[in-house]
Length: 104
Image (cartoon, rainbow, N blue to C red; front, side, top):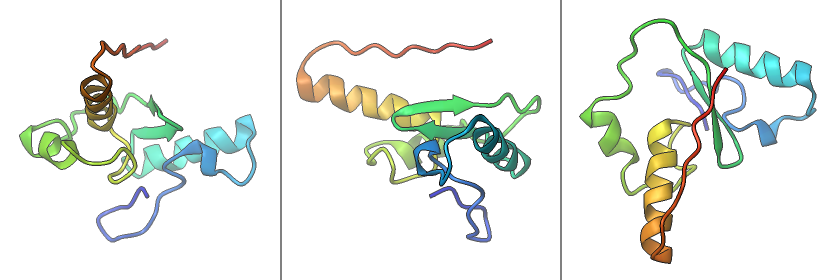
């Protein structure tokens, strides 16, 4: 669940939880989360990111530790959750894993 510092949820942290799956509801959810400083949102096991055009304190060693060894949906959406899930999958299956990062 995507929560702010005060515990309130800001939109849906995973687009598959939208009540209505339309481009409008997708964009409204993305806009709401962005306005609340949530630049990552899941679509299942895929993470959608919006460029915040500013520096954010979400990538340091403390953030790595928050996501390391956790289940994918245990923490709010983040690239570190995707990376940790890929690493665990690679170790569990004893084979290489690929992550595609794409943008416009």
